[in-house]
Image 1 (cartoon, helix red, strand yellow):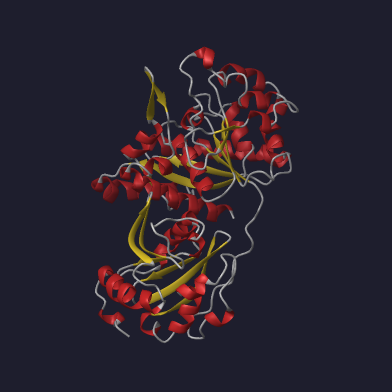
Image 2: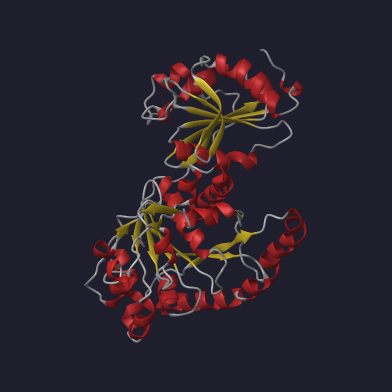
Length: 461
């Protein structure tokens, strides 16, 4: 054994002495089989090892057999890094991941989007368990194992901790989430579109519904390509038409695919400025409130997640959005006016749940208040921000997301991105994930949304 875990002083020594000099060679990975400090879009990996190597370095059909390794400082606990490892495995379609700080060594496996701890031992016991580790994530073991198969039972050493019971199969039912706050300017649309994009990136089938007459989510999805009214192809078929009739304008007829917004693109039910003029008529028809709910029921087998962008008011369209949803997220900058509006949001949710109860539906569940558009000033973050967060849980008695979306220039740039088209600049907005592929300044925002997406997945399972 070429390393002493008790002598590893920092993350750099964990990488060099444990992983490069000992672990990778012991698992059969040669210098041409692994890469260090790999940058893939907004993902930054410490190590990526291949069972079958390609030149030049690519991720393709063999990537499910790849292994990611994340090294941490010996002073850091690994518990706080599991979610990020799960994000990496999901986004890369990789199967196995290792977390280690030299003193704690863990192997994880991604099963149906669930991160499962397969093996764990103390750093001093890695050498003694090397046969088990090699039969689980060694190069030869992965070369001869199909992406869907599990490691042999004998791979799990008696010295390893018991693996936790695997989670129940993922709930296949469609999840409907409304994004709502009655105060504008809190980042609602930014949260909506990037949540939808991030879920789609993980392989979920996603439908985005825009119920706001400002049509910001519709614009962000790249569906407002026209410069003149005569070219407007949304005014005659949008979400208001879908709400105007029980039998006409089914979702299949109204849905559009986003354009240049994300890869892969998402399905969108667009809004339009003419929602305002149609509101009074729709509001006067009681059945209109449940039409979206009914039409979503007809496509329940087509989507995993439906994300609904609602207007910052208590109008008809906001009611439809919350009434139709199983879950609610409240984006908030946590400033006084936004916090003062939370009581009204809770009353609005209660009224909407009375309607759902009359329809024999489970109440819409508040997933939490999501801190968004949060300033990155260190003085603010150290003094004011903790008090703002405490007010949500201690004064308003509402759940608070762990994830935080900070106010960054990259978020604005991604939504306001344009392309030249002759004499005109054509709007070409992009999700933060798409934008991060060409602008490294977006990496922080992309990582924040990745954390949010996995937290939403956990809360809705």
